[in-house]
Image (cartoon, rainbow, N blue to C red; front, top):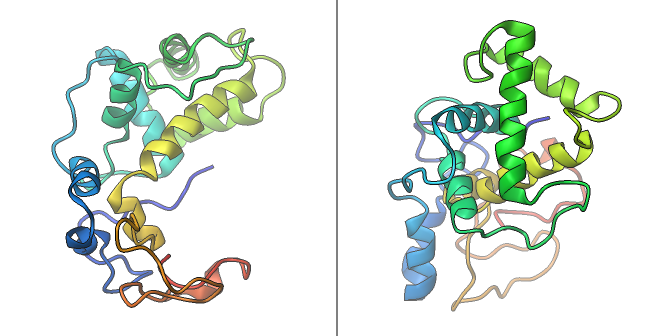
Length: 215
């Protein structure tokens, strides 16, 4: 249900030792550099979620992405900024509300379910309780709070993964060397690496179909 967590408090990810994508910032043009560096600064103020929704969303994203501690990527602020600016994916299921309304509705429903089962909000639940609740939502039968549970799950994971994998900390963890503009990539092909990329220190842990190196 989760993706590997960002390693809090470490400068060098264990999987790609010596690799840090922001070390490549001098090779980007000004526009690219400003976009990427804005993602590692102070998170934007919360404008879309209310206090209860912010707490529920943060707990939800922590479980979906298996994050905890001070070093986590600020997913809630990133998703909140998108929704505050109506920067959706440009579509939604006709059986679901628009994304902004769907987030309000589903976070309230998540808190309602947590209170019904555990007597507290979702954010106040322990991690095991949260995961049990989420697994029930993901794998249950029929609708969930009058909504298609698969579409609810897709809404949550779509926004969570889009935010997470747009952040340089996540790029460090997966060995992605960042934007190629204007320098570009020249060593194309399976197992090929650029001089600034780093080999995976644990290649046996990934499928054989993946291309080699930090790319």
